[in-house]
Structure formats: structure tokens, C-alpha cells
Amino acid sequence: MTLQQLRYLIAVADHGTMTAAAEALYVAQSALSRALKALEHELGGDLLVREGRSVGLTAEGKRVVRLARTVLDTVGAIEDVGRAAESARVNGLSIATTHTLAVDLTGRIAPAFEAEHAGVCVDVVRCLSREDVFESVRSGLTALGLVDAPVPEDLRSHRLAEHEVVLVSPTSEDLPDPVPWSQLNGLRMAMPTRGSGRRSEMEAMFATLWVRPIAAVETDDRVHWIASVLNGEGSMLWYREIAHGVFGDSAVIRSFDPPMLRAVALVHTADVTSRQARAFVEFAQRGGLRETGDA
Image 1 (tube, rainbow, N blue to C red):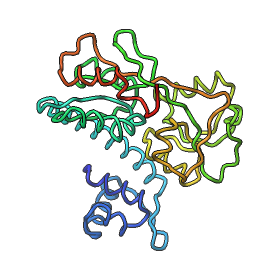
Image 2 (cartoon, rainbow, N blue to C red):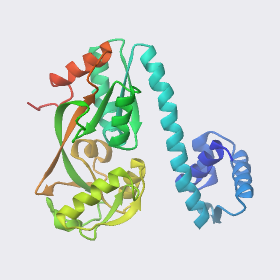
Image 3 (cartoon, helix red, strand yellow):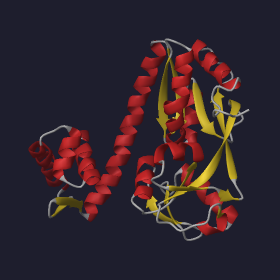
């Protein structure tokens, strides 16, 4: 079994046909088909089922795809370790953050900092959870971390801004705006996998609000959360600014009643020795990370 075979299987699952998957991967369809047949032979069962021109997944195929996504996410995280180390050696700055905040960090914050500090390259290390961000900073893998509060007492933090938590739903979902929290009871939603840190946080919040949504989609891959909303499978919680940038008019973004705000903070250890890290902290402290128009 190879990582390439797993990537091929995921591509077929995502694109629905061998032809589309091969085009997306820039490989010959015959090579892709042979690799997947070899994978099925090694596992001793069918993973794919042809439905006309489309290709679907068997029950075992769906299970393998779920596991394969986890494997490739882990491989990507390991590769990030090497990229972060290389970035530090070439006048770079490594910052750990979650997949949610990485959208804002890579799309707006990092470019603004790099434009102000010529020659400095920001390397964003994506982590699966807030706990992974804290560990990345503690271990010295990254100089800084960008997370939503609260922050452990052993790390220093700079509160940067507050993001509004909103409900992002398919356009077919009939809900009021703003939406009372009670409307989440029984609502189909995309959620992190059961047992993960983020899922535990969400379930604790729902318990406090006395609501119980239905986990229609369970994955730690934020891309699949987005796809579930666009496909009409369920709603998701996200930050307003990021949701608008990703969805535009393709989904309905509603405030909650009462509204919920989450603070975002920059974290680091007691000693910030990197010149680039100190510059980024100063950039943050004078408001460089706030949304345009914020005080």
C-alpha cells in the first residue's frame, strides 16, 4: 500500500469518476485504475462500485477513504515540521494555527506583515487542534501561535480581536436571522470527529445551551465541512469574516441571538528570541491583525 494509492482513492471519491480524478491528478486513467485495483487486491475486497459513468464507494471503500484522509493529514503535518525548520533557517517566521484561522492568516494577515517587512517569509503550520498549536509553540517547532481563547497560563498571549461566531447553512435551510440558539436542537450539522478536542468543546457548549444538534457529517477536515454546506447536507459554525470570504452568496450566514464572540490571541513562550517573531508581535500589538475599520 502506498500514499499514492490512497491519494488516488480519495480523488475518485471526491470527483465521482475515474476520468475526472485522473485529470485532477495529472495521471493517465489507466495508471490510476491499475493502482486502485492493486489496492483492492491487497486489501482483499472491493472498494469501488461502478454506477453507469460514475464510480461510487462500497461500505469498505468509505471506511478506507475516511482512514486515508487521516493518514494524509498526518503526513502533511509531518511535512510541515520540515518546512517550518527550513523556513527558520532562511529568514522566515513559523506560526502555528488551526485550520479555521489559517484561512485568515494566509489570506490577509501574513501578506500584510510580509508587505511591511520585506524579505521575511511567514510559514503557516496548520494544526488539527488548539492543543496542537500550544504544543508546537512550547516545543519550539514554531515561534508563535494564533488561536482562539482561552490560552494556557504557561504561555504569554496578546489578545488581538474578537470574531463573531455565526451559523453557516445551505440556502435551502429555513431559519430566522438572527437565529435563536434553541434552533440548533435537532439541526443537521457538520462537526469534528467524536472524541476530538474541538468536538468536546462544541458538545460542552451545546450542553450549556441545552441543545442537541444532529451530527450529519463528522470529520476534522474543514474542507469537507464546507462541502457539506454547499451540498445541502448540514450547517456549520464558523467566524463571520472567514465564512463570508469562503462562501460569498453560496450559503446563508446568520448571527445568533444572543450573539457569540470569540477572542483570537497570539501566543508564544516567555522568551521571544527571533527578530522576525518580535516584529510580528509588535505588528500585532499596534493593531496590524485587526479587521479594517476596527478601533
